[in-house]
Length: 414
Ligand code: FHN
Image (cartoon, rainbow, N blue to C red; front, side, top):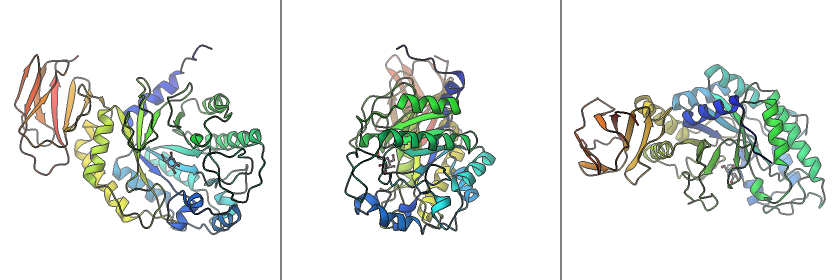
């Protein structure tokens, strides 16, 4: 069957996504209560009835969507991706498909996604919904997949009913919250060979919201109907995490999702926070690869976000306040990421991001166009340079503790 043309509104949404460069990932759910990450149900082999009891106590009374969105704005993100339903199967939104949701099952009784959607719209931030295809709770997630354990569910189920359940929920997510940025799928890797009928689900999404993007975290090459290739804990093409594909799409937008410590969901004992330098390095290298960084926070069960996350987001936001023009709405530059840093580009301007280079001279390969001038982004001082057929050499000022010495190189065009 011939590939279907991608409609204009989705191409425009992809172009927007490519320029957005920075998003905030939020993993938040019943698991947050135990402070041991979003896999706690699986890792501690918690039976369904016990987890249901835990879910019935979820009461994040300090949740304030406007405070979360204010933080996101300070950080400089252009989109938020939040867990609507994670592998524990608990819906963090009002759904008619199951009573096992935050409005009907908990004393909280509010729909945080509705509140977040309103706050995001007011702030001009796009909202994406993370949706787990893997489910440790639903009886019809059968046959079970690689992460199965004996958790009290019957050894039977109706897979086609489960698919219908997902499509009903996706319909709700795409019709009750206004325009959404897209759906971020996860968990298909639990049963990669099952009959997911992705074409039907993708067609449904694109019919309900023609500009919504499908971002599948299946760790495979992108398929028809998918809009973004996302990499987990890795820059595009890298596979330090052990499950990413080394294939990198040449035409789809790219994204790297990254934890700020070593956990996605709130983890009270995980203090391995990345430094601001490391996070900015990921943002720059993601942009140098032509991709976005989706940086994660795991809010606490009361709905607040820990100061360690807040401080880092504020610092990255302050950095973007100075250097944002070298990140937002750029594409990967003429020099692919190197150990010293990366390049980004907009029009005739190449931004050379020097993250880690101790010497005064930095030699670049040819930039594909003649250099007309070079200056430091901060302060504007001219940067002496030499060019020849072999490339361009920049004479850098000494590093003064900056996270990234950005040299703005104006070329004659390509
Ligand atoms: O299992 C999940 C994990 O909990 C988390 O949501 C990450 C985010 O990229 N994705 C899965 C692992 O691939």
